[in-house]
Length: 220
Ligand code: IMP
Image (cartoon, rainbow, N blue to C red):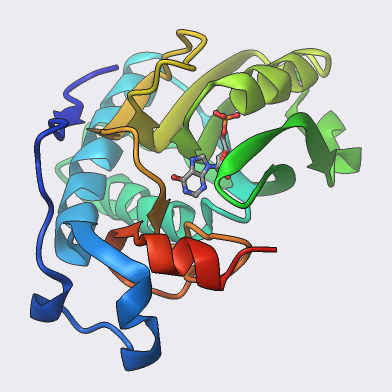
């Protein structure tokens, strides 16, 4: 985990009143944890770091694997930043980016379910012998990522690198650490920037901590 930004447990977050939040969602938000602009800034640096690592390995093409649904926003922003570094004349190197997608599901309400479902794996033969960069939203216990990695390994990629936007500090962690992490965050349930609670809040721009009322109102 290189250059990860550590958000401490005692960080209160920002008052949501200072941000553009749709009125019907306001009572569901406890605090804003990471403003949208800060996420975008951090992603530019992540893209720089990933670019350097791949160029150092003289990689010619990369399968950039989006783990849906939670990573779709992170994926789009990261791919844009990676393409910008790739296109920059002063960058020392270039690789082709091949987009790939997979869908996982393990959460209901605010807790991880025992089973991790993987959908859309039919196409995974395409990663055989390739360098794969897995783009995931968050590592919580680490179980989802371990399951995904063992599935990917069975298709014999050349190398797998994992980048995730967030890593939660939780006592339930199995110790898994991705190669690149945007932010390490306290053990709270977050929504916004494509993070959902029962499929709601993905369209919220900043990353927020859900309120008790939000948990209650959108429970399944
Ligand atoms: P893990 O298997 O416990 O590491 O859980 C990983 C998955 O749980 C992520 O890909 C998310 O879909 C979901 N998840 C974990 N924490 C949160 C959260 O705070 N908000 C929204 N989804 C979460």
